[in-house]
Length: 353
Image (tube, rainbow, N blue to C red; front, side, top):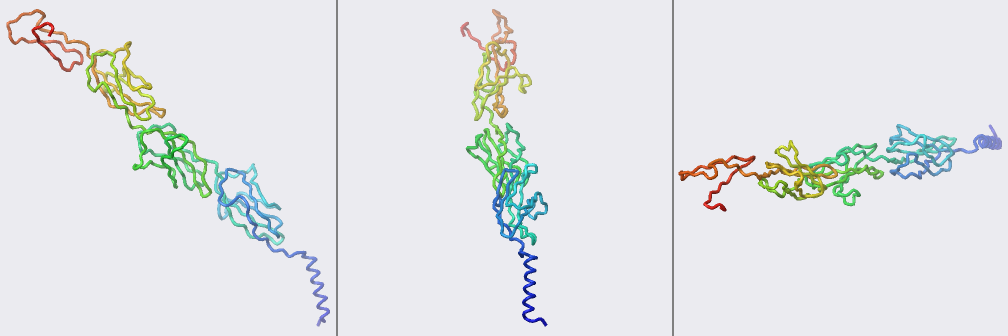
């Protein structure tokens, strides 16, 4: 048996051995507090910077960046005696949703992971599908479509009657890549502008390009001449009423109701037209129609009307001039003229009628 003094000497020697061999007994470090970026932030930087606070027992730190919340796929990892990390330019992150975390390390091993934060890199706007820019349609409830972008959660579409979107006529958000104007809120005839952006848990993405669409169902209302009018003017005038958002108008005059032959066609900023003296219309039946022309395309044709130019008198047949007869019920005849529909005969006992 050792004496009490011997035990004290043995304990002292063992303590000296432990101190010399293990200067400090270090436990794994606690999880480092994250600083920036904040959780669920949106950024346009493909080489983001990360920072965290140091903890007392850590000598180095490890950061991991992943595109999955369980870190099943590690995209970037770095270790060292630093409190920050920047994704290098040669290996930028693409647009998308990312997760990051940090842990400390010392001679005793790795500590606990920090909290997990996420961030979104977003520089792409949704590519627009249809309608194409400048499209004209007769549909008051047009359809719009676009392509989804990576990690887009919901989308917002805006429709306006101004290119600056000062007035928003319709705006809708949802998990879709298309939108149809509802029957209960149709778009009147006019010019419209539309754009789309992505909305995520981190914020709103950039707006897409702006496109223009024209809704056009109204045709010009014809004025004069009335349908079926007969006139003796070889340079007749025609008129019509302007329609909302009409820029220019086109008139066509034809000698066929199908307009297979166009005799006159003129476009301009006017609501009336007179056949020029240098190019008069011969006697005959004519058809005319008008449509609106805009920056987005041509509107529908108006109703068709007809008129007749008639300046030729019917050639008389019998009886010949100066003839005498004993018939108290004489007969009279004449030749028809082109496109004549009805004829009127007058008989008088005076040469002045």
